[in-house]
Amino acid sequence: MEPLFLNPYFQEKIWGGRKLATDWGYQIPDGKIGECWAISAHPHGPATVKNGPYQGQNVAELWADHRELFGNAKGEVFPLLTKILDAEASLSVQVHPDDAYAEEHEHELGKTECWYVLSAEPNSYLIYGHHAQTREQLKEMIDNGDWEHLLRKYPVKKGDFVYVPSGTIHALNKGIVVLETQQSSDTTYRLYDYDRVDAKTGKKRDLHLKQSIDVTTVPHHDPKLNITEEKFGDSYVKTFVTAPLSPFFSVYEWRVKGELDLTRQAAPYTLVSVVDGAGKITCDGKTYDIKKGDHFILPFQIKSWQLSGDLQIIASEAGDQE
Image (cartoon, rainbow, N blue to C red; front, side, top):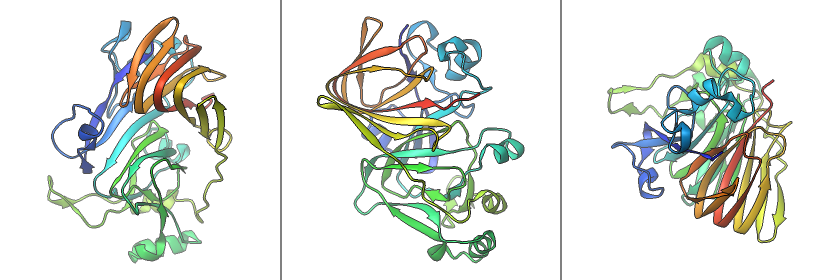
């Protein structure tokens, strides 16, 4: 069994840029390309397999027809989505629903997500959270456009990790590139978009104020992360988030300097994104070259693997779907 190497799907966005080509080497379409859907089974942008017996099939097809690759995991849809986001301009201020609200109103999963900051210009910050103490105060501040007092600024730099549970008001701001791990959902409620006009339509983008007020967690509380690091010689494994704080996914950094041997524990499959460097992965006696910009799935049948070289990898595993 081979790793399932993937061809990403690229999304044009009003806030996108060209870093996915200039910094990552992807062959991207013309225009403002904001998102690389790197490991995706979502119908708005499924990634396709580029090697082995499943070449040309997309991840959604594998989930439907070859569930054995995922250890016969439960769930109607492949639960996770890995992206790279290039915020050439600031994204809208937004919030995502939880599973219950999304299923009722959008007929898809909710959206809890997290970001690993790949690069950030000096003095970069996110919008993360808000200062309202009640839902009535939240509505009043939104209705009055009192963004200066409502929105919370959160400084970030390269290497930071930010966990964004559903119900959290947030926005990536200009000059930041992140790897995002999220539930497989494309539902976003915008509450502020800087009054900008989409050049293609000549109109402002839609806002979703009622939904935003409905789903925002009030008052805001920062989640308490317990980031741990385990060393293996010059290499290490850092655990950013896992259950019970994050029921939908666990996210890790694998930093390889030399060699790193890993064995999967309980999860039935693993999603892997190489975010810097180059090296090799060996599994089932076969070795594959890997480099920055590669994304792949280690299916259920691969239980252990060896990484070698000088590599930085962000990996994730789905939470229990039963």
